[in-house]
Length: 81
Image 1 (tube, rainbow, N blue to C red):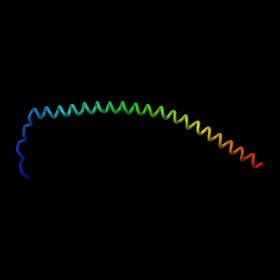
Image 2 (cartoon, rainbow, N blue to C red):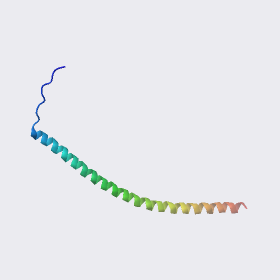
Image 3 (cartoon, rainbow, N blue to C red):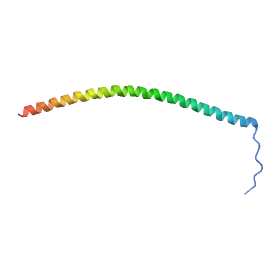
Image 4 (cartoon, rainbow, N blue to C red):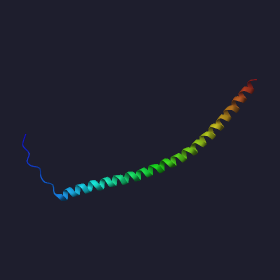
């Protein structure tokens, strides 16, 4: 295995650039995550409202269907007599 030489000294400008990009990337990621979290919270709130409306409609439809089924069963029971 060939022997490697001494490590090359990295320019302070390059080090500064690397750390700057890392810091800016972390800050952007935090900002973006915050923005997406707020958007998702709004979507969940809208879905919760829509679910409440949908549940009320389903309950009404079930009530109507049950009444129709009871009426049909009563008609069947009275017609057999």
